[in-house]
Structure formats: structure tokens, C-alpha cells
Image 1 (cartoon, one colour):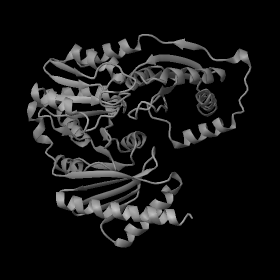
Image 2: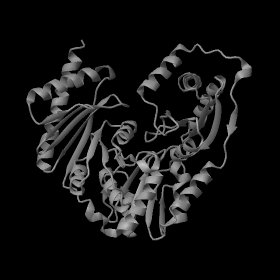
Image 3: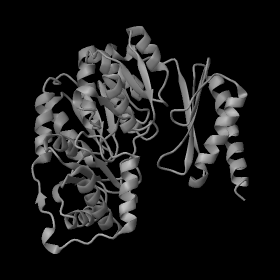
Image 4: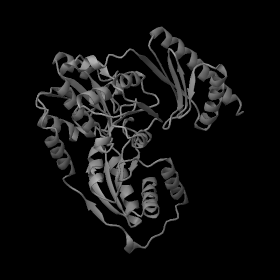
Length: 434
């Protein structure tokens, strides 16, 4: 019932706010995705919106269709990298940009009112769209037909990219080793989220088979994690450098506030500039547009290129990485020898306490008079020997603490110090509510 009401609210908002009465909808491979999608479609149709149902596919396929079907809004049922019991919804404009917080707030208001009444004869039309998976696979297979010399291992994590990535890479690459490329709505192999800790089999295969690189996707395929030819995990910042060098990109860089200083070091050596943004795909691509940047990178693994309409598509990015590596040869590993060490963790905070905790943290860190403070997303303290970022999560009742330093000993010192400061601040904020 809730998803039906969400469909109604999205339909009402799309028509009243944007004068749009076309919705493209798709879904990932989770057990509940079909059920939730059908409920949402019913709500959308009630409002007089025409629905174009693409079926089960990675989010990149929906984005490609969204770019070509003008005057539509995209809707994708997924919980992305979260465990299989979760599910949710992504909404995106025809530009590929996700709905922002103001859009979601207004949809929530319409949802809560639940006062919609529409005559039966004004319902929208339902269209089943076939062939989009094949169109996507064929398009990318043609565009990346130059990758015949690349050897790769791909780990789809039993998610939606099982439907596209293996076929595309086998069409274009040399040797392709598949891992976890059978759909499993329970993500039993390694979970829906690829992490350096759970892609050990990918690392082993890349090393033992002497492949050029390996890639692991998350549940819906918007993110990809990479390992180099030696099986070493490549941070998203390092992947961005490989793309810039291998694709001969020329332009500035946007990085989320939690990305490594490695990017500033690299940019300085190339006469480029790094602009920082809040964490989140929308914030990164908005900043890219404002700064006319060529590439945007998030610490979570999202990478966007202006030449590809900022598409949030891990399969596309992995093909571009393959092209970059083929251009550079195995010397690409020499470009990305990071001198930095990073640690992160999260501490539980009741949702209603997040704002108060962050205010107290800002005051305390300012009173310490150490380094430069940046407040575009949480509190970031830049020090000569490294930096500390404390920011509230947008999706969980936690604050995240990230620390980077060149010296491992200093990293540990800063990490312990600011975890303790956060714990004390959370405890103080909790006591003041009673």
C-alpha cells in the first residue's frame, strides 16, 4: 500500500511541478523489486501518468533510455548496495540527475496528505518496453570494440550487472573471467556491496591469471570497485587518475569532501585544479557543471565524466577504465603510488540528535584552533600532517569519521583522538535531551 501511495505522490508531483506525464521505470533483481514496482506503477497510472516499464536491468540501462526518451522522469526500484532485505526507490530527471532533498520533501508531503481522487477514465497508459537490455549491450559493444587486447575479471556480485557486463566484456575484450555472474536476489556470494575486504577472490584471480585489471559491481550497477594487475585495490581517486591519463582527458577535477589529497598532488603536477563538493552524486555533478570540470569522483566509488552526461553507470566506467589501461599499458600502476593512509568508521547517533551533535563538534573543533576548518559537508579539519572529516550520514543514524595522513603513526593518533572527541560529544548531546 505504501508503494502505491508513493506512486501516486510521484505522479502528482511530476505533473504539477514539471508538467511531465511520462515515467520510465525499472528495477533491480531483489526478491521484492517486482512486487514494489507493480504497486508503484498502479499508483502512477491512477494519476494519469503514462508508464514505460523496462523490466529488470542495471540502472545504467535505464539512464541510457532516459537520455533518449525526452520529457520523462526515471524511477528505479532498488536498495543499491544494501543487504537483500532492504529496498527503495531512485528518482531521476531526464538529465540523469537524481531528485534532490527539496523534491523528496514535497513528494513526502503529498504522500502524507493521501487526498488523491481521480476518475477511472483518466488513468495513464501502461507500456511494456522490450529490447532495452539488448540495445544497451549492442551500443557499448560497438563503442568499445577497441578493447580486444584487454584481459579482465569481472565480479557482478549476483546483482543486476549479471545481465549486461559479462556479455559486453566477452563481446569486446580478450580474456574475460566471470565471478558471481549468476543472479541471486539474496546476494549470497559476497553481498551487494563490493568492498576491499570481500573481493578477495577477484584479487586472487587477477593475480593468478596475470590479468590487466579486475572490477566488482554493486547491486544495481551504479558503482564499481577496481583492482590493478597486481591485485592491489585501486581507490576511486586512483581510478580517476588512470582515466585522465589513459583517455587523455584535459580539464579540472571535482572530488567529494572525503576524497584523498592524492588528487590535489596529482592535479598540481599537471597544472589542473581540484574543486571539492559535498558527498553525493548530485552534489558532485552540479559542481562539475558549475566548474566545467571533466571528471567527478566520490570516495564511495561513483565516478562521472562530463563527456558521458555524468551517467552514474559502473559498467560504462569499467569499460572506460579498460580503454585507459589498454592505452597506458601495465605502466599505469606507476601513476598511482599513493603516499597517503586513510581510516574511517561510524558511530551511532539517534537521527534527532545529529544536528545537535554536529553543532557541538563544530564549536569544539573551532575552539581547539588547529588547522583550517571547512563546513560544506560536516566538519573537515585540514592539518599539515593530514585531515579529519566528521559528517552525518544521509542514509543511516550514524556520524562518519574519516582520517587521512601520510604517516601511519600520525593516522592512528588522529583517528583515536577524534573518535574519542565524537564519543564525548554524542554522550553530551544525549544527556542534554533528558
